[in-house]
Image 1 (tube, rainbow, N blue to C red):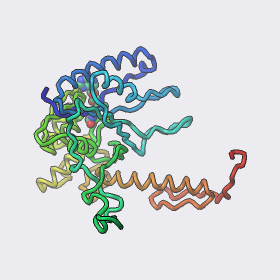
Image 2 (cartoon, rainbow, N blue to C red):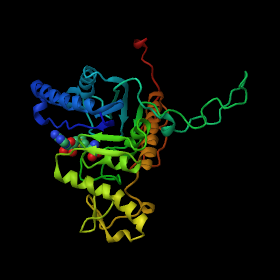
Image 3 (cartoon, helix red, strand yellow):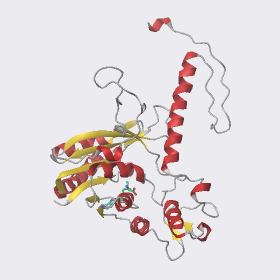
Image 4 (cartoon, rainbow, N blue to C red):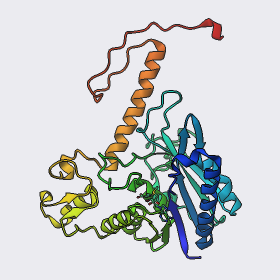
Length: 332
Ligand SMILES: C[S@@+](CC[C@H](N)C(=O)[O-])C[C@H]1O[C@@H](n2cnc3c(N)ncnc32)[C@H](O)[C@@H]1O
């Protein structure tokens, strides 16, 4: 038992086969063997974070976490959280609500698990709120260091306009992994990702002084992971993603135009001050604003009010006729 934390997203490319129940069951029984090994190497204080999505085909929904949950329980693991990873983008469904979340299951091996809440607090909404009566009158009523971030997480999925994007189609955002690593491990702890892709967990482990072990089947992804970890350009001056390139030029002072990155589309990369490809913090802010705007627009529609204006709407706000709110009394 040598590992403090397992954090991974397994492959679920069951392809067309997954429609068949047999293929799904086969996939899950293979996964149970991998998870059994992960649990075996985990220290008694250790945790597993297993991130999975849902499949849909011909209207049939298979939320994979629902199948993994009993599997982890069978392995003697103890459930702590079912985290919803909400995102703003994805396929648009026409006969049901578009899927805009994936899940991260957190299980621990025992009750003496690590959870360093203070390392990952986020600002309180009412930072200066005080008790207004009683013995603690005048004292802050909330923790000035911030609050628990909760189990609904908003991190942008890493796609073309995200500076972390590598050649991998389904990368973890680094900040999301940092939240997991910082809260459930200490410096020098060992983190395992059995399906490491282009190495997001490894990169975050390195950034936060944790040791890392991992496995990846695809040699190209593995090479990109190694390059991200080295932080250096390859022999052709190419980096695995824009973030690694920007970090490198910020550190060395070399001109950014001298280099390329693997998924580059434009003629030359831009530094962060001129960003058209953004860091996670930008996406988070944008997503929050967008969700708030969508809610406000829907509330206005329901009540027959003018929709609020979102200056950032592409092509300007569509003109919607002002409706008069109507109430269908048959509903009451
Ligand atoms: C969902 S991706 C993980 C991506 C990763 N979290 C990242 O941020 O880059 C799953 C990865 O598992 C790899 N994989 C599939 N089967 C594997 C196996 N048997 N052993 C190791 N890696 C495997 C795939 O090549 C793929 O890169």
